[in-house]
Image (tube, rainbow over all chains, first blue to last red; front, side, top):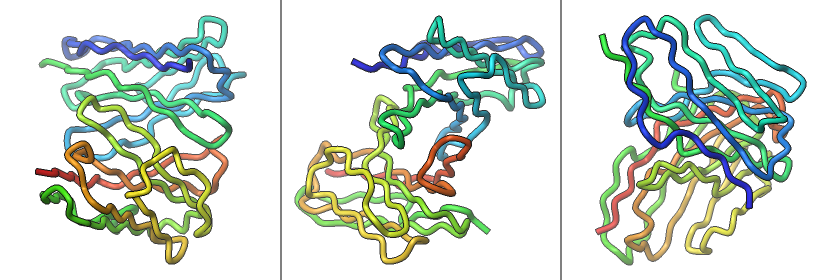
Length: 111
Length: 115
């Protein structure tokens, strides 16, 4: 069956460090992958999209990699700040037009 | 200037009642969705509409009936509410049906509690 797995345990890091979140998938061959941020009590907000022919995508302090051989995407936040604390969701397309989300990883950045 | 707005934000109701959640987007998008986020935080698609036409019905009980009067609105009506319907329901929209290159814009969510 198709699965999207993200770290179920919260990631706690110190301010200024780089946070790395993982998204693994099985039985998918996605043409792209998206990352979203969700704050408590709010809806998810789109951050980045990376396509299968792109190894890496950057946006300000964010970097996403996409390894279709390993079936894995890594999401990095450099110089992390307490304001980066949130749940980060990866999402993959399924059956053409359905976007399926992982359960998300909680990131806590401590000052 | 809210992009995707849904009401009510909080809803507490008894089992067996019928309730509706309204959603409107002012982004000019063609496609709208309803997602459900359960207590384990999984975000699952329920329905999608493209220009008022139902595209996806993700094996949702027929107690859930979406209605799209125009492409800027997608309402969700739930009949005979059950305890298991308690969740956060997110309305969302995207420019077109094709995901590639599209961003999905989510509303703030409607917290439904069935007692």
